[in-house]
Image (cartoon, rainbow, N blue to C red; front, side, top):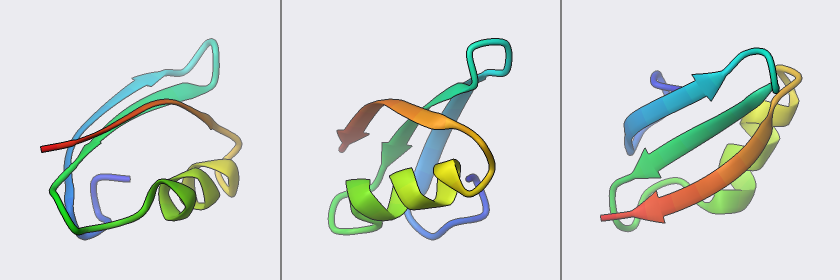
Length: 50
């Protein structure tokens, strides 16, 4: 996730397969983040833009 443009912070709970992602304003959409995480077997628990 950190390699995607606009990602400022990622917190991952590997046991629960959930990640929290903080994005820069106007960057990646929530849907794009969910798609990227889902392709790796994770869900998205929170989504915050600065």
